[in-house]
Length: 92
Image (tube, rainbow, N blue to C red; front, side, top):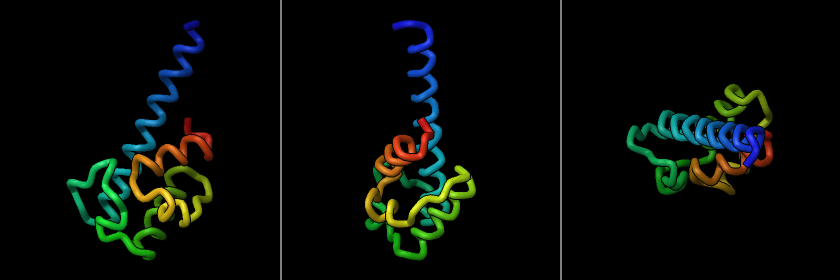
């Protein structure tokens, strides 16, 4: 692995972790569950359409990008949603 490849890989991993941490924090705050984990399901945690809009609103503020609310419904765990955001919104 060349130094540039190693740096890019480390940066991507740090960004992915940052996105996941951001999402877990937002889910915890919006859903009111301090012990929510990265694999906690939005629906099982009591999420509904209002909380989905609150999550995407906070994401849009944090990331500076338009995030469709449908992503929260399609990828209901912070871990799954982080992967999509990193892949589709250039966070990685």
